[in-house]
Length: 67
Image 1 (cartoon, one colour):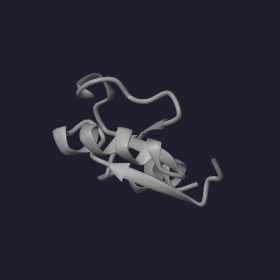
Image 2 (cartoon, one colour; image 1 turned 90 degrees about the vertical axis):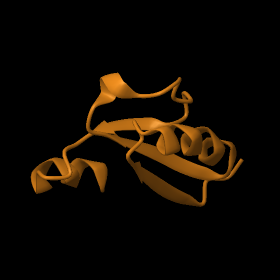
Image 3 (cartoon, helix red, strand yellow; image 1 turned 45 degrees about the horizontal axis):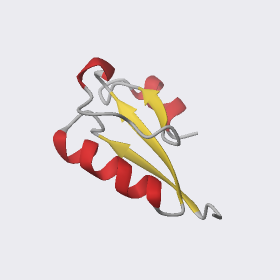
C-alpha cells in the first residue's frame, strides 16, 4: 500500500471520530488522531494510526499535531 496523504482527525475521542479512524486506516492514508482526552477514546485505535495529544485552545500544542 502506498500512502498518498496524511489525514489529521480532530475529535478522535468522539463517537464519530472513533468510527472514522478505522475506515481511514484501511485506505491509503497516513492517519493521525488528535486527542484532547486520550482516556476517553471509544474503542481501539488501529495500530497504524498515530496518536497526538493537543488542546485546540492552545496553539503551541497544535504545532506538533500539524507537523
